[in-house]
Image 1 (cartoon, rainbow, N blue to C red):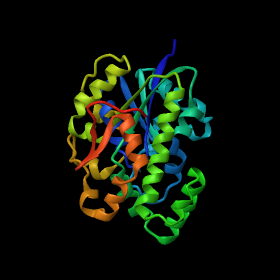
Image 2: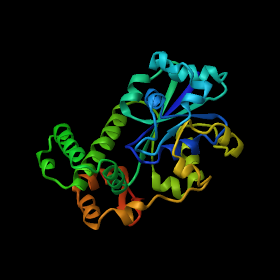
Image 3: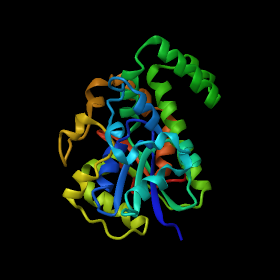
Image 4: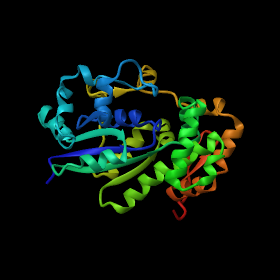
Length: 285
């Protein structure tokens, strides 16, 4: 029997994975290990990241020397260094390739597919990759990966919406092929009802009932974090900047992308006035 669990959060960037990780790790049986796939990147970084993510990897002895070890033993090393105290490690690296590279025979693997409205993704990624050169790179990359020549002349919003679709469809397809416990949740559900959402995830995975422990949450806070929302405390406001800052034309371009709407409907969601909303019944994927 596996000695511990790794709960991987898979998502596109800017989906709220840090928020979900910290909510899950408010339970004393859990420990958030942050975006572990980016440990080396954080250790070598000088200055803030473009995504607004910060890290305490360099100052936390729990992660000292970890980068010199094979990645396949990182989770188990963390678990053993903490005296096998925590039954579940929360890794919000988001990356599918990271999960595949680091699946540990000593651990059972659980997965949460975290979704966020693609309009929020288009807004955030578009603000980071704002230059014409960055857009050209994204056009060519998505054109090659998705065999979609039309992306060579599509709008900025369409290019990033297709990227969101490729990334999340890849996660969904992977989970259909795997025999591992998996669940799906949206950022909008998490921000509206954090405790009941996390309780549902614990029940889906057959974990002991979720026990919110504020003192533990403070001690076991994720080593990667978003200072901008951590400062808001236990009840951050929903990030709806895309509603005001993403043009109506760009929002409409995302809403009108039929393959994206069909994909969301297959997972049981639609794009509502302020983000993803659950459908009464999922339609065929």
